[in-house]
Amino acid sequence: MQFLALMNLRKILFSFISFLLIGSTLAQQADSLKKILDTTKDVEARTSVYIRLSNIYQNTNTDTSVYYLNKARSLAREFQLEKYSGKIGVSYADILVMQDSLDKALKEYSNAKPAIIEDGDEEVLAKLYLVTGNIYLTNDNYARALEEYNHGLLLSEQNGYHYLTPHFYNNTGSIYHSIESYKKAYENYSKAAELFKSNADSVNLAVAFANIADVYIKTGQYALAREYLIEAKTLYQNTGNTVRLSEIYVSFADLARKQGQLKEAFHYIVLSEKEMAKDQKLYRGPLAGIVSLQLLNKGIICFELDSLDKAESALMECYHISTEKGFYSNASRAALQLSKLYERKGNVDQALLFFKNYDHYSDKASNNKKLKQLAQNELAYAIEKQKKAQEIVLLEARNQQIRTYWIFITGIISFIFLSILLFLLLRLEKSKRLRLIESKKSIEKDLEYRNKELATGVLFQMKKNELVLETSKKLKKLKLENEANARIVNDIISTLDTDPATDLGEEFDIRFKDVHTGFYKSLGDEYPGLTTNELRLCAFLRLNMNTKDISAITYQSTNSITVARHRLRQKFNLDKEASLAGFLSRF
Image (tube, rainbow, N blue to C red; front, top):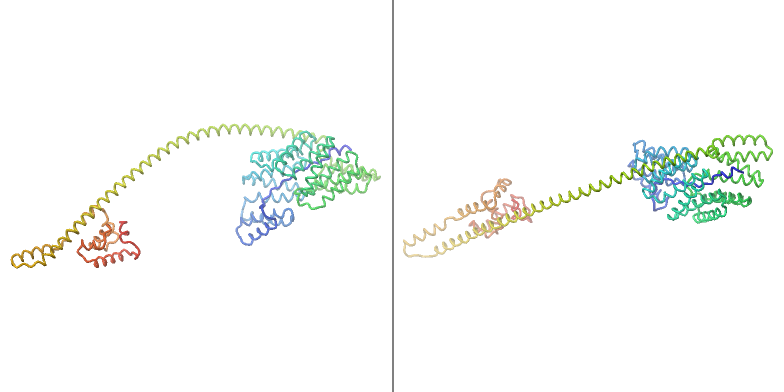
């Protein structure tokens, strides 16, 4: 039958956008995220957690997944958290795809795309182009599918998303496969297989092998087709991917039927049904298309085996699924086969009804010759448009390279100029620092010299005073018989005993002020209650003189000096541990 040659056995790779954490089981992630909800009231944190919980339950419990998404969307709308709208929309769309609601999913993806672009997350955007392209391809909108794939492929190759790139090649191959351009389909499938192999991605390598096998089936190269189907089947069995294994058995059935081995073909359909009934957790994508094709093959094979009741059941189920989901190609084929089946049964009314249905859905399907030619023309236009767009991109890239070159040259010149300027400034600054250091050293040396000079003068005066006192003591001990001599000695003693400390203090003040300019003023301004003697005591302490030396200069006992020091500490509010001399050194 001619329409069987048009049967679409292409395998489309759906790659959904995931915002899940990696490194722990989903159950552990869910428990951890729920604890966060119990402990935080931060709106953004809760919104993010709701989205991640939705993604966790996406494969196991869509109702729970939608529940958390609704929570996230409610918070995002209430508090105007626009940055989460893209992620929420994408998660809704992923669920709709798995529920085979492709039109609704496409609308959600399209609404989410501006927010994803606004976020600037090019990896998520590349995935988005892949999924939307897949939906357009599933709906036979080849030109739009190619446009989405080209956008995504460009992003993937520019940013090095190596795990995504082969998906675009595989699904582009499915476009050419659909319009019977098998050479280009084979080239794209082979490129995808090569990249999947280099990525050690066994599951998707098997998909590429299955697609290559379907090309060989279409072109009558059955031996090569079988080799690739066996390779794909082995890979799927090793990974436990039951849905994909079910698809492979449909391809085996198609190959066996084309070789006239109807019983073997039916055997493969039975194997396909058994695999489809198993656990489907490893498959993320719409199942209705696979089931529809499986039932269509079963119905055709049973019809050719003259098992009309089984054929009627399978074809009727295929017809209902296909009309409900918009698979118009499969719907028209199932209707035509049902028309022939009822004709063979002698039910003319049903045969006529389904022939009319076949005519109706054939007009909607894109695989009849007229619409296929239109699709090919649209595809050619899209390819040319993309080619021109790429030429513009390349031209812009060359211009950007030239601009970048001149910017680089200008940058180098500016860098050299600034480096020289910076070097000169640093050298000037270094010279200034050296001059300042030398000046400071000179001032410090001068101050040290003058302090030494002052200290030497004080010590000299101390020695002089000690000599005067000692001479006075000796004269007092001297006993003179001559009254006139005694009177002269007593006058000398009286002169010596006249307080020399007064003149010494005044002379000391003059010299100290000359060396330590502003000491008396600064100290007096901050502590206005200090007496002249206390200020002078502070000056002695500033010169690091000890109590004994100060006692000798001032003609006061060491006990008096100790008491005076204590009073100063009280006026300055100093602790016992604090150094009085250190305190005075800052004035």
